[in-house]
Length: 121
Image (tube, rainbow, N blue to C red; front, side, top):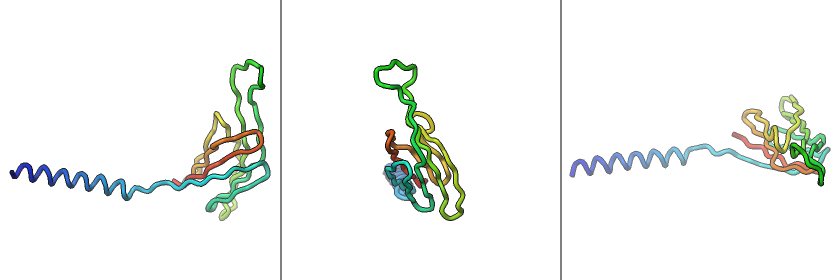
């Protein structure tokens, strides 16, 4: 009887600890915006401006060794410090930029617009 009581007590403590860890775990916050070249979007203390979009996609009807990609060029500015960084992203390569505590991800892009998300980690 005593062994069963100890077993249930230990099981209860382990389950309570697991629930507490999952309850207090901080989840990330994510927001996104679709922009055309020349447009900008501000999230918290970051301002993202889509400078231009270039494409190296394989033309229809042509056999290419590589599919190519769409490359949005983004200017990222910290609105508090006015520090800025200009980066070229890609739908295949460089799909995200880490600027702690933020991660900027290229969610989707066409030759006319790009959808970027900002995640606060």
